[in-house]
Image (cartoon, rainbow, N blue to C red; front, side):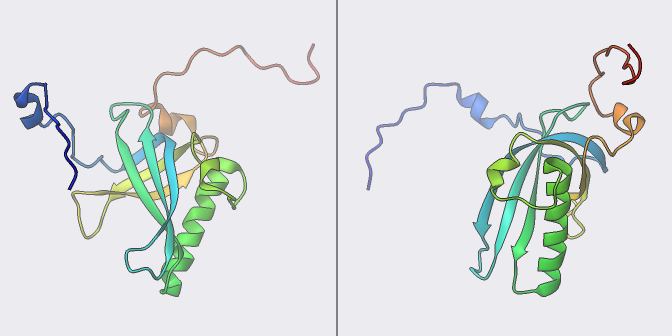
Length: 160
């Protein structure tokens, strides 16, 4: 047993308020940044997966989080195959290659995630796909992203 001596000095009403929006995000594409990624053992101890935390970076749902798990070692060969393919797509979208040596390489990467509802639990989101910011057309992201800063016109290499 540990003696804590803890006393909360804040307002008890604050503790009873529900200030976190727990409603799932609507289906759609969102600009996001990976804020955490970790390699973990499954609860059953028969496999491993990469857990990724995404932070929505623009639009109405900015600062909301979405999580995804990618099975890399699984007793079900089909689940492992799907997990490997999805994780390879995530690596390609963020690192420019379909592989990753360390989960820390992913943290801080920006990308587009396709979000939907879980089939078995419509109160939870799932990441349906990942894509590089460059591969999604700008007009499709414009409604979800913050307005871009004005950029100077680009000159072609042969123009001086």
